[in-house]
Image (cartoon, rainbow, N blue to C red; front, side, top):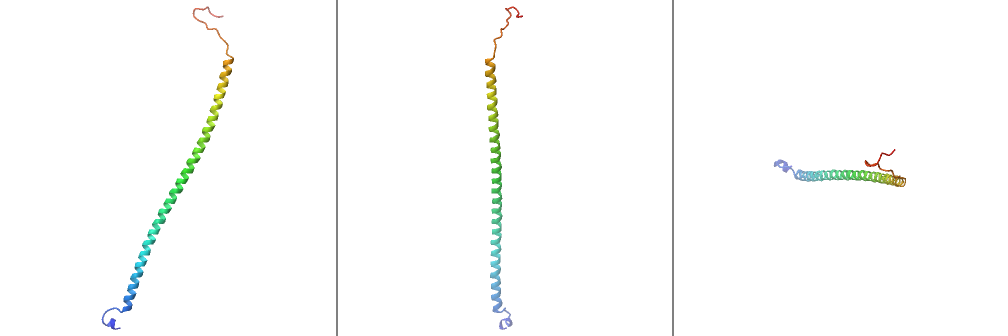
Length: 111
């Protein structure tokens, strides 16, 4: 009552004000840490999404390359078969070739 009579707040109010100020400071600090943690979580989520996208792209590329390799192998086999067939046909044609006389301008017509 003496403090109130002299116009100043009682000591208890000073202590309460100091505690409140300290608590508000701690709340502010915690809020800043919370914001930093949220920012870090978002950064990690973005990094995880990028890694997942890269994994998907790599998987798709590998699937494409495997399909391409299979197709190339099939084309090589078809080409080998075509070459073998052509080689056989050429050999067969060479062994059954007959000699045909060639008519020249100086020789009489063949009849």
